[in-house]
Image (cartoon, helix red, strand yellow):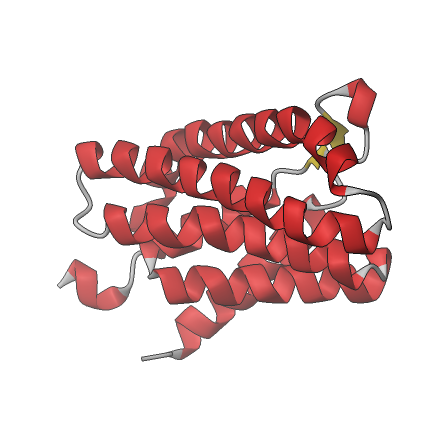
Length: 177
């Protein structure tokens, strides 16, 4: 159920994630179109505290805002959304029992799902979008796989550090009863 506090938190975290998306750090200079931004940390935080559905809502809002205000690249933003969802949904579902083992397992499964899923999605989308042969995409795959593995590992470590500190503040009221 969406109460006023949850709606406000969804809005605040989506807005914060949107702003943080402007922090773009190329991980591999050879493929500088792959840029790390820490916005999915905020999305994962809301997914862990509330639910995977709330996380996906925050993810969608931040990506729509970024598309409207900066990128104008529907394919790029759709790929960003797919990567975020592939990471956040399994991680948050596995974490659902809220213990340290399941949290770490969620990070690992989410990172593997996003890394593998994005490798596959890039093989499907990039040849059509960039109008290049699939063989050229295969040359990019090690970079794409490495990028996603690093990106979601960083997101996992940072979320693991901060989510315990803020969960009591943001925790749903029914969980405090």
